[in-house]
Image 1 (tube, rainbow, N blue to C red):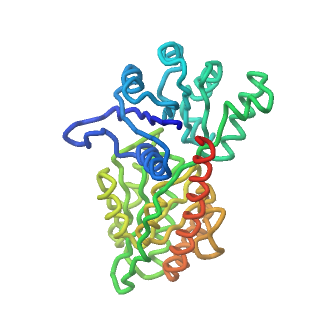
Image 2: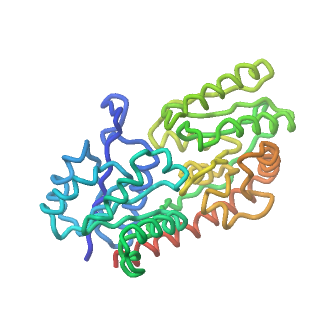
Image 3: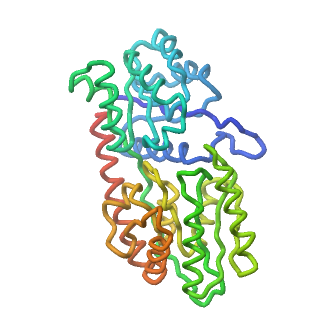
Length: 356
């Protein structure tokens, strides 16, 4: 039977006091750990480790002796694999990408590294969305003059999983003076926080409520500083009218789920997504969600006018969808949970087929 080892890189700002012992409280770690858990549940042998850097990989491969090593995201310099392949000639290495091409454009070495990976034997590139799969296949097939069979063997689809532990729809206190809107996740331009803040203000004004707009700004990434500064500037002027920006520290997952459960509506109207764990966190806690068509499990399944995705460049459309979700939370949550269940069931089938 195949055995699998997921290897992740510890965050650069790791602090033993601030962070957990594994050194990660991120979407990437959560994504890998969810897959690791479900693979073990369906009878595959899987382990997950977090390392400091490239130099720790050999030690972990010796310890676990896997058939496959899955490197989560782009952090291992391609030249390292020439050394690792000599040390472990029977191991198959999978570089699993977690970005769509618009987000990948912000990682300056991405295309160069992926091209170099494809020149190494026993290295497979995995994408977690069909669109990225097609694009990387096209790139590497033309670059390497691969035939279709070679391309299908070297570039594969391994999507995200999310545990199906759902709570019923959250009770909304319509008598509350404030409406709580969550727009969580790392602050970066493609997450589209600013227009969602404008939509939330419009929404709260239309329903006659004051607004608490919740973010967590512990991670500012890929030129996200201007986005955060604009959020602060917007709410500095709006606070006297009852619209407040609430900034939360980055927390361990269990604490974050509690925070999600306190929201009336969750926003994730992003410009680019491959899965969106934060959106899944909302609906797992029974909180209605408004997302964009970039969230694959939301775009394909939800019903019109209830949790149907909003236009990320149109604040009125986002606010309109928020009003419908606010007035129909049960339908929104149940439809979104059904959609996510279908997506994750399909995910299990894909992983099972590939490793069996």
